[in-house]
Length: 89
Image 1: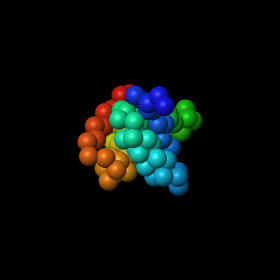
Image 2: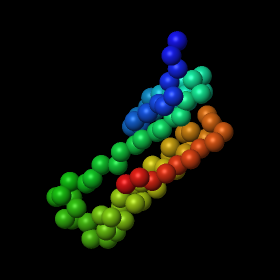
Image 3: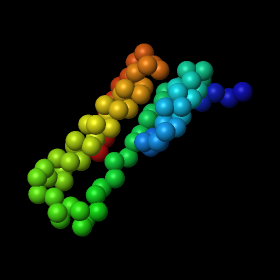
């Protein structure tokens, strides 16, 4: 059987996120593959952006990314020894 070398998991906040992540980690371990986890932070609608004065939309986006990284890190930490979280905007 051919082994996977790289696995990409696109994560969403859902009730099955933990189980999906656990399955991806197990698959990566079995195949000695690199697991990349991506979570997309969507832009706010323009109508909503116009109403926001403080914090700025850019600050809100940075806060959302920070919170999502922390959540993903907490999900991944019990499953793997080495975790590297990056922020590619």
